[in-house]
Length: 212
Ligand SMILES: O=C(O)CCC(=O)C(=O)O
Ligand SMILES: [Fe+2]
Image 1 (tube, rainbow, N blue to C red):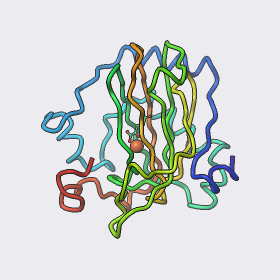
Image 2: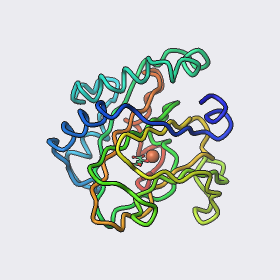
Image 3: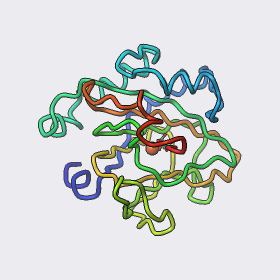
Image 4: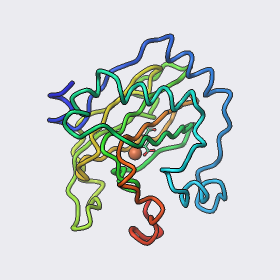
């Protein structure tokens, strides 16, 4: 893992089937809100101080905490220190959804992991792949040309697939290709960092209204 993550910025692995099944059952029973500007629930989440956010269901948080304190991250913890803050986000993607190239710099965290859960089997033609790439950025660290990103990896969101990303380099970006199959794509995202580094509450003043 270490060579991949320190050389490429990411590493692809998977979690045990029973663990993925257990989380999928919880996720299927969960409630999803449209992630659109203006949604009051999303606005509240964005204005919240993540250090004080205790709204993440304990099962998701416990899973991420176990990942963060587990052997996969041992060297990252030695290298970067023991993380004092974990964000957890659950997203559901459906046909037509996609996400453009970005770095998770809206809420700077040092390591990001993405766990995929799905009842469907995903083939490359289905879309919904996590693409990981490298791209040039401007003086603020924003990607200059999304069309010029050099793609380094494409990961289908199959059940139990886990992708680790170092999030310390704004040139390391990721995107989600358009979902073209009528399949349901769940991603449980964990971000690992420090309480002392909370910036999300100042997000609009730092990055403007178009930060997404
Ligand atoms: O769902 C995914 O594969 C990636 C989601 C993502 O990049 C994000 O929410 O920042
Ligand atoms: Fe992201």
